[in-house]
Image (cartoon, protein in one colour):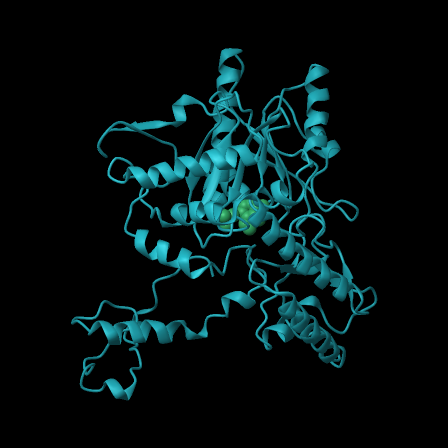
Length: 462
Ligand SMILES: Cc1ncc(COP(=O)(O)O)c(C=O)c1O
């Protein structure tokens, strides 16, 4: 289900069931899909909403999501205290704006933006918005170059692997850019330098490199891509910038793989996005995007508004949103520092690697990745298993409370169906051992079935 639809008229009469304890307090019918005529006492309304949510999965056993499911109570209190501050009201909440400014500076340094340069960035609602802003900047820069050279400005394209997160396909469709999707292959589960260059032409606005592929957690080879694009430009080909989608890796690589060159140390990297609410360790929703310098962010994308008090620049797809996630991001930076982030991410990746090795030792599974990069790995069924599928394993795990998604790989590897585990802060090695035991039992249970049972979910959204 993507969009909520209006329910048929007959269903609109459906009413909520109310606990008989509340008889007398709630003796008016409470429609399910219509605004009630009257009021309810706050305690009763809150109890009803609470009860509605009971059937949601347990967030910490949700190994499908990349998004933080645990923060310290102190962070929770700060969030509750600041939910009422609108991030765009910078004049009214100058200190919230100041914390955002500090976060952008901290992140730009973390990603090795040149000290003498003038990197520029903003918070967003998440990596999707951040990616769209990065993509828009690429498109506008390309258009300006073409216009200056007197060349046609139509049919821009963006080169990326079919393993991109859906936000990039959305960007292309919403902003009229051809998605030049390079298929993954049996021996290549993400975009390589060779394939990236092969798909570029003079209408290419940029190449998207992913630091932490959504499908299997692997880093794409950003430095190699940049070197190959350098050669392309040096040989008289187009000069194509890179945007790094570091939604997950942006808060992992700086702490665990500091020698890996993927960030602004690579000259060709124009902009980077990351999700504060993934390995930035903040509850949803906060993302970040940083440009190497103000040349990488064309002026025509930045709006100046005066109706907030003072003249303020904004570059965003949204306007109002709470400042609380930004405050929580700053809290984490202050609370953990470099060492703390390194310790937390290391522990998380260790749990992921240990779990991956445990799964590799089971006869029924073969690892695709082993959490060498972000604390995420994917595995498939061992060759020769035909009486059950990864979808059956996912279902069996779900009956034990674990949410481990099963899904097909993107084109051209749609016949490869995998399970994926995202290990996040708060998932201990004890929980990892419990999951391994349940996976062992789930696989044994599936082995006893004569044929596959579960219809694959065609709509799994990463
Ligand atoms: C590589 C990548 N890019 C972008 C996104 C979208 O991130 P967000 O949920 O912060 O919008 C994700 C989410 O999983 C991702 O893995």
